[in-house]
Amino acid sequence: MRQFTPTTEVDFVIIGSGAAGGIMAKQLSIAGLKVVVLEQGGWGKYGHEQDYTKDEWLNDNPNDADRLMSDPSRQRNTFRRSDKDKATAGSHSYGCVVGGGTVTYGGSSWRHLPYEFNEATHVGTIAGTGMADWPITYEEIEPYYTKAEWELGIAGQRVNSPFVAPMSQDYPVPPMPLKASGALFKVAASKLGLTVVEGAVAIISKPYMGRSGCVNCGMCSGFGCHVKARSSTAVTMIPAAIKSGNCEVRTNSYVREISTDATGRVTGVTYFDANKREIFQRAKAVVLSANAGESARLLLMSKSARFPNGLANSSGIVGKYLMLGGGASASGLLEHPLNDYKGIVTGAGIVDYVPSDPKRGFYGGGRMTARGFDTPINYALRGLLPGAPRWGAGYKKALQEEATHKMTVSCFVTQLPLETNRVDLDPEVKDDWGLPAMRITSTSHPDDIKNMEFFRQKSIEVLEAAGAKRIFAPPVGDSRGGAHNRGTCRMGNDPKTSVVNKFHRAHDVPNLFIVDGSNLVTGGRNHPTMTIQALAFRAAENIVKAAKAGTLTRL
Ligand SMILES: Cc1cc2nc3c(=O)[nH]c(=O)nc-3n(C[C@H](O)[C@H](O)[C@H](O)COP(=O)(O)OP(=O)(O)OC[C@H]3O[C@@H](n4cnc5c(N)ncnc54)[C@H](O)[C@@H]3O)c2cc1C
Ligand code: SF4
Image 1: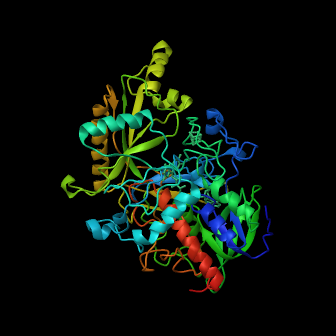
Image 2: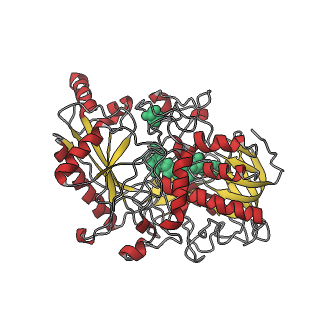
Image 3: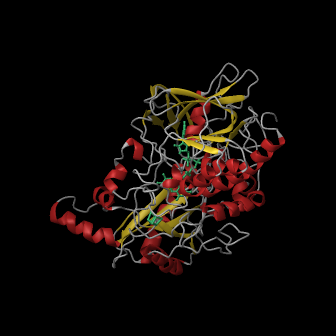
């Protein structure tokens, strides 16, 4: 791998190597630009290239070098529902490894539908929310969805349905085989008059671009893929970036500040290395791809006399309109074994409730997915339905029967963007590096709660129609943080109400680009990653143009 010294002024520092950062690394470096990627996590490979572990205990209790997710006991964060409450210890955790969240994600890769880019116009603004149209249309982003699907390797079935985004090309590989829960979804949907589609996943169903197809090992979401079938940026984009000879990926590099000069331009970044030594890396421009939570936190930590409220924050919008992701679910036991723990997490989705329908009396929509999720230790500790014995022979019998017969419906639904829902810096709590902890303030809008309850009821109906006997549907509630966070640095045309422009350039800082889940103006029906990645390909194309035109440091 190419190495650069910190005193060398590279063309770009990219902060974070995840869903978006990995794409930025590849696209900028293959265009001939000199790139240093600073990733706070490691390679996560247990000593061998791409050899992610399938040991459930080790995966849940990793050594630092093998860690795939952030550790909230050291990267502390706090949570409160509103400004009136005192924030208490939070459990927010996200992919923290080369490849970011894409190393462990379930891989559901739905596109946003065309109207999801202009829902304010489509359904009307909703009182008390920051519902707004995006500065781009579906037509503008569609070619980049296609590019992302083909470059990453997405399996799926192109369908002609009002509930699914239209596509200009097929997926590069066929859909994954239907799981038992998917087949039962079809049985239920035909009884209820609903539509099932085989959802797109970032998991290849057959060999593609030198990678193996999925071998259905069953330890999927939450684990790294040992055969490279999951199309994480760690196995798709990062290797190509390194091969270009223009990119260094520097791991265990935790960025604490983006620095600027007297003219307000970025000069580089300061980070802690593995030994907590501070290092300054010079750069002509910075791409911030640290995810919706960390990107906002880093901007707020990068205060200076010129940017007293944090970098790129003259609008005061940085950190605001956070969407953590709402959901609803129900599980039931079927008469015959499904063995749904095998294979990937999910494939099939019921899509009829994707659009918001005024007849329901609230704003909201979402997708229902059929899934089997639990791995053995997790199942034994948390998977049994309420009422099952937790000790002795009865416990063993319950495990034997339930683990094989359980089907879960998980719904991924809309969450309205509220200005009060945000990431900021906790005034008291610090992380292990002495930096202010991320503080999350979040409460769902009443429509979000009604929507979640709607999907909870629909999940029960679907399970009943599938023939489930004992059904348990946990009560719905606010999310406290997690991997699907979006918003916080929204894109827009007006510098007073957005942080970046439609090409991801910070309104306030010409040579700072923010490209990750933070840019989403509205959250879609959750599952944001395919949109984040299409945006990244589009952003990279425009950033390369700006670099070649010599307009990186001026607007
Ligand atoms: C278990 C799991 C299942 C999921 N399933 C799905 C799914 O099925 N479908 C879907 O759409 N989404 C899913 N997600 C969410 C998905 O992973 C995220 O939407 C996506 O990864 C966000 O992309 P991003 O580029 O914004 O940030 P990330 O992919 O999170 O990348 C950010 C990177 O920046 C690094 N970083 C952060 N701060 C710093 C710093 N200060 N210095 C240096 N590096 C830093 C992080 O370590 C990370 O590697 C899942 C996530 C998890 C964890
Ligand atoms: S189920 Fe398939 S994609 Fe998932 S980790 Fe196993 S082999 Fe990889």
